Amino acid sequence: MFSRQKSLVGLDIGNDEVKVVELTRTSEGLELTGFGWGKIPSPEETLDTVKAVLRESGIRCRKVATSVSGRSVVVRYITLPNLDDDELQETLRLEADKYIPFDRDEVSIDGQKIESHSEDDAASDEMKSILVAVKKDLLQDHIDQVQELGLVPTVVDVDTFALGNSFDLRTEAGVQDEDSDKAVALVDIGATKTNIHIVRGKTSCFSREIYLGGKDLTDAIARREHLDEAEAEDLKCDPQGNEQMVANAVQPILDEIAGEIQLSFDYFENQFDFPVEEVFLSGGASQTVGLQETFERVFERDVKTWDPLAMIKVREDLVDVEALQEHLVQLPVALGLGSRIQDCV
Image (spheres, rainbow, N blue to C red):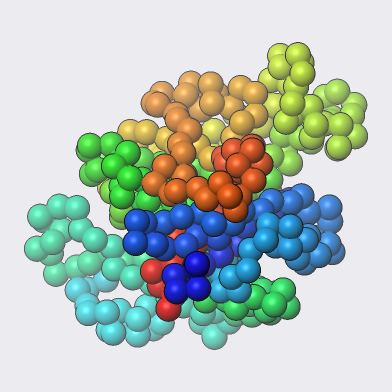
């Protein structure tokens, strides 16, 4: 049935978990035709875990979109003279040394123009652009890993942009706020890092990674309650009546994460003279006891969760719906990767 339709696998390999989705473009829109999730026991077992998840999910499509992140990935928002697309790519390569901490020859460079949100910007002789630089050895290792899995890498994205792509799908579903020009922050809290992506409509305005996440919260519980890591992780995910104890243990880390995010908001608002009005949470650690309340207190603005499947039909005959719902908060990056289906022939 799907042989004449276009499908793409979104593969999100984190430090702690692997999430995989298969999206299929039909005449009626996007359908989720495959899903899998698995815990990664150790870095050495990452590939075996991905293979097991793909096998158990029943996903047959070999074309895959993946993403990179970390300190070997640099994203900069820069201002350049007005250029066409061909000139932009060459200029980014020539100008990269000004903006990245690596030698130009060590990185692969890409970028694009940022759409203007004001008439003054549109009439200016300058343009805002995104510059992305990824160390070539990281990129090649990543591609080799995907190919070793028997998959065909068709897109390599950046985690924060995949998060934004997933959120963009809400526009097609008609669930985006009427004021599409307001700035909102997407905050995805994973095991070892927190992604921040500020967007206005479909325009990326700011992104940053904070190297604090779920493992830091687990470690805080383990230290305070004298537990091993596995016990502390279980308690964080399911307090079972110990909510106050968990909340007390993780509060210093939550305050630290919230403080770093607030610094990002302050920087964005000073640069753009435009407020961040809402915050949308995702990521497994976003469900930690006390996190949403802490963020609302520190940010003094609405903090919400969101449904990344709002405009995607789920093929319940092909997907374990119960497992899907259990891990829904962890899927935006994988779904954002899968949504790149329009870029793959």
